Each structure stands twice: as C-alpha cells, then as structure tokens.
Amino acid sequence: MKMKRILAIVAIVAFSFALPSCKGKSDADLKTAAEAAISANPELTGTTVEVKDGVATISGELKDPAAQAAAESAVKGVEGIKSVQNQTSVMPPPPPRL
Image (cartoon, rainbow, N blue to C red):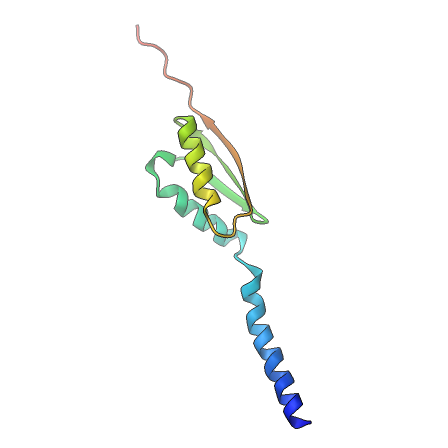
C-alpha cells in the first residue's frame, strides 16, 4: 500500500515537471526569435513582427517581392510559429531621372 502511494506521488511530481514543457513558447519568446530571424538578413531592415497566439504578423516596406518572400520565409522558419500574415509592402520605384 505504501509503495503504491509513493509511486503515485512520484508520477504526479514527474508529470507536473513535464507539463510546462508541453505548452510551447510564449508569444514574447516567438516574437524575439522571429525578430532575430529577420535581423539576420540585412535586406529585411525595417520589417516588424507581432505575434499573437502563435500567429506572426509581419509589416514594413521592403525593396522588392523577393525581400517580401524572404521575410515571410524567415519567420515561418521559427519553431512554434503557427502561421504568418504578411502585411509588408514593396517600395515604389524611384522616379525616372530626366
């Protein structure tokens, strides 16, 4: 009887330590990781990231569609990000010189 009680207590303690690791990263942790992924590419300077419930929203003005795709790809590569809403825009071309 005493052995069963000890095993039950050990199981409860082990479960309580394992449970927080199942939760995943917080939105703040995901935002920090996504910002680090963005800052690794100098062409993505000016891109901002917000994270809510694991969904990242990126915004900012980038030089071309390739940079937009790179920003989205960088954030999608962050472990724990569920999806990315890409609200970035492309800078208009400079006016022609006369």
